[in-house]
Length: 171
Image (tube, rainbow, N blue to C red; front, side, top):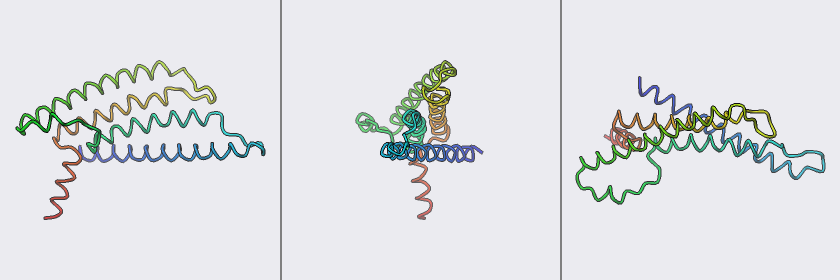
């Protein structure tokens, strides 16, 4: 059941990331193209640049959780590599995961507060609440907590699961 939920969360996240990125690219290209046709009375959308910038917030926060899933974030493991005992190294890695969970809990909490205070704030050129864009902060943080929770309960990162699967297929 957990793997089914995990699979669906990953599909939804990937779909959101692809959709928002595609929308952002199309809108950005349209904005640039419309700048060259001002003589025909076509003008870039006044709200286009705002939407592009704010959609990037969603892509970034969704991407952070994907980086956690694939264990591909930049890490300084100089000190971890010096730990010879696998048991102690595992404990240190768990402690780092717990500290990251603490940070994401704080970010999620502050993101909810920030989003709720901006519900009545509207974008300058289009009447959409800023809360829709700032909601990326708590949503992305909750996805990060979901990834760390999955890692801590099942004990393997994405790369370790992929390697186990590939080893199993080769046999």
